[in-house]
Amino acid sequence: MEIIWKNVKHRFTAHPTVSEYVIRISLVVFTVVVAMSIPNLGPFISLVGAICLSTLGLMFPSVIELIVCWDTPGLGTLNWILWKNLFIIGFGVLGFLTGTYTSIDEMVTTWLDHTPVNHTISTNSSQGC
Image 1 (spheres, rainbow, N blue to C red):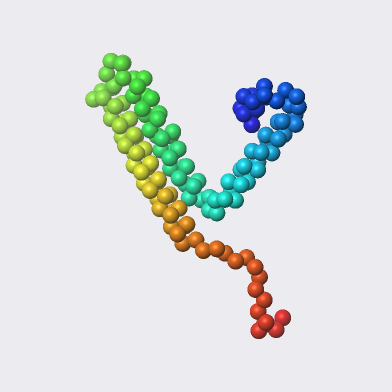
Image 2: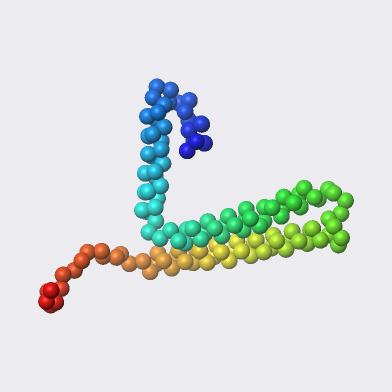
């Protein structure tokens, strides 16, 4: 919220406190609407995890190290830094592909098999209570 407010507070000079509360409430309502519109958040969370973990956790640090160390004389004995980073990048690509495929497959399976759930309580007159 602080990041958003710093960038837009100059537009709301008349009533800054009210404007800040309106923006806060709007963000909460938006979050609730998104959560309600997606019936099963599990596959989305796993998709975001597969994409972010593999790219931000594995591939980007290795690529950055290769870029930074590329001009230094040699990349270690037998270029071990290069091979290490290529292995990590390959492992990240494998995790990205398998995680993304699994998450998308789970989303498609969930939505194709999704039947509306009736949450009403049915009364059965054959029971004595």
